[in-house]
Length: 188
Image (cartoon, rainbow, N blue to C red):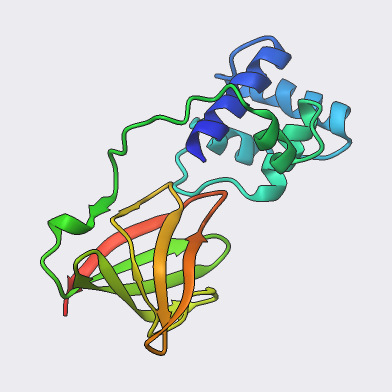
């Protein structure tokens, strides 16, 4: 996700013809986007996206779609599917939980847009049990395997058990925007 957003910003700066670094340049970009798309993205959203103003969350899908339209794409998904030149290799460095570094019994809270929250209990052997689920397709009591949980990346679950029975082979949470919250809460 983050690679796509970085690429999107680079592409916007290429089209716009200059780096986006000052308030007056943000004003000009805002006007250019409005003129080209007929839609508005707030100045504060643009400043957050470029890191001019600190904001811990990823932009909404609607904003990414408008910015993609500014570049001539139908929407954000069209931009992503057309971006074949991205290098998908990257090191994970912040808010990463490796299952093999846990002892067992830790409670891990994860979240993703728009308002999904899950609390997971680490069972050992790369398995987690869902202790709490809010607005998620995975439910309380589900058990799944996962080797790494990382902020900004999708959650890749495999071998999902529901009510002790095989339920699904794989599930991907936060597929487009990645997890926006990853924290170890406590040991149960």
